[in-house]
Image (cartoon, rainbow over all chains, first blue to last red; front, side, top):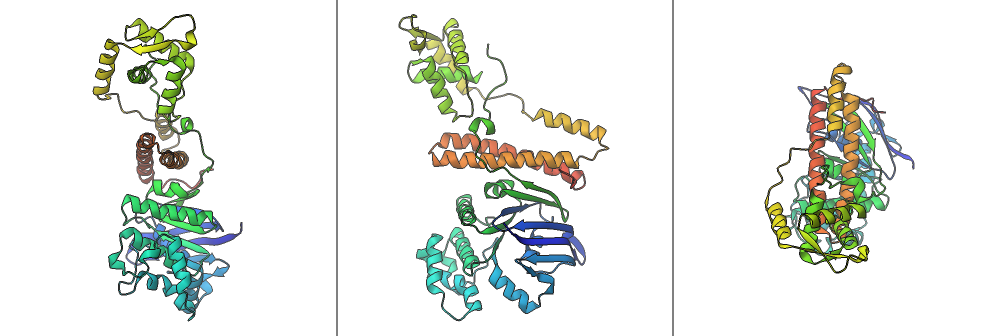
Length: 244
Length: 176
């Protein structure tokens, strides 16, 4: 595996408040990893994700993604980097209401070239189980379908890195499970994913690496065992009382 | 104590041999509780002594001896089933004692202890997630319910660690 992301001594200072600020974060992410970043609100996890996505710049320190030092890129260069390298899934989908699902999916492809990507878009949507709603408008889709459209939009340019900020936060449990199952499948196929969540169950469901943040710092970076264990090694349903 | 009532409950369905009791009990619990056959026979003998079950057939071949539930056994089982579990809250007492001692001995810096414990809980949560997925895949919704309970308890443990970490001032990076 090769390194895809490297953050070195990142700080992020916000004028007038400390919420979401970063205070000396360094970490690296390998290609093919599924990493969860966990922490309470205001711990800096979303700020970190936005820096990796090139949506924001750090106050100090450097961010390198897929060989590009983001600090050296102009605004245009950064926009191109986001378009070609990054897929981003937000909590509230951020679909354009006046475009159909398919048209939403195709936006990043159209920003890249004038060649129609419609057939690729439809194929991708079928794979994600939303083929039959491709021509509907977002308001006619369920939350789970809207989020899958957003995932398709994030993947249409085959990004090196898929970033997701609380992607199930606005979904019911079942739709959330489906979105997470989709992420697990993408990861199996080799997609590098960074998931931001405050939910430990979600974090450990797919990710084998869990980075915990608090007050703008990384307080733990855990790599979990992925081998399946015997039920009796995971749950013990046994009263300790001796039977009489 | 639940082994005793587990045995009574299984015999309430139909008369069983000791080995069938063991196998059905373990299958019911989805492998989360392994009992040895000796325990099962001891339990059956105690139940017989107390007049709750009785052997059917001859005593000659122990392995083949069937046991059936008697009326007092059914009464005892129903009373147990209808009573709430009123035991005390069970904590991971070992971690709690470590926490108390570390507070005294480590000048109150609990960071490394909390970070290591959180890792252990995250690993457990991951294992439980896998177990839940497997149970659902196998159509074992009864087992999935048990795992769900364990998941919620583990999430509570993590929440507790997070609260302790916040009070401890953000924990420590030294977790190796």
